[in-house]
Length: 358
Image (cartoon, rainbow, N blue to C red; front, side, top):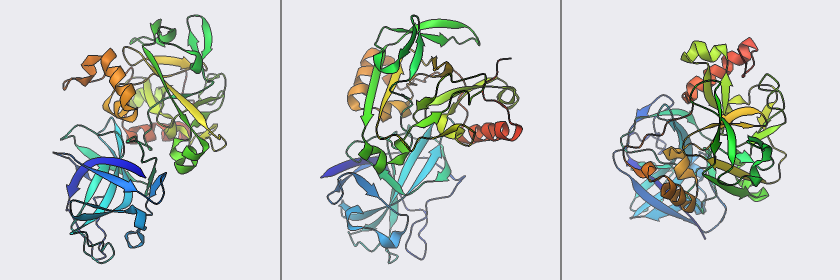
């Protein structure tokens, strides 16, 4: 029997005549002042909990009873605080365990964060309606905002030349951009983490599939070879369009935002994948297949996305991360989701490369 613990909050905003509870809409904002948690036991399908967004067709394995209330999975929303992105699930509930999800009996709903959890009282904006499914309930990990990482076989630039990511060790020195543009230095890796995903994992949740960035598709002949990264892994964009939009010509953009451009796509052909993420003493710009990209960013989204063991190890290395006043500093500006989309649309419209030395 699989279990998933979902952290979130109860809400009772609006009940429609059909009985389906509608939680806001794109552009709506909300905050959460306290968290509750619900553990779902899925005894029918041990690998996937899915909902089709149709409240009248809730499968039996999606209905759970908790503190006298019957809950049913309904759909996803993508939300943002302007910097970090989160995925929430919406669960309709009936008081007293009535199971009347199609009879107008809902008393409200529980919104739960599927993986990373923002700080309390953060203002969140709904940015998109999701697909009504999430997978791998055995662990409390996000599946739509998987932690940024490289796939096995990716070559990174070290002090001693190109080296595959799976062969890197703590203490190895990688070529990095300093805080000043175009200033290069070597930085030591603090820790290497990895996670293997099977064919079944990828079939259960296609959003775990990597993004393939074909050789030369970023501009200036970069990457030198095809590069595969997780969908939320950010690539460095350097262009005059970025300069006009953000008053700085270098910004970091998630790989999934680049798939509208030629030569960049979700890799549907991989049968399995092993992901690696590299931790430094601070967020760094490294070079993968020659292209500038990010290391692991120790913000709350990433820390909640990795295993509890890895999170504990990172906090042991950098105890300041667990402090209430800790604010991670990104190596470059990370625009909001909407601004990332606008940036890529402008590049697409003007047929400009994403990386241009000028």
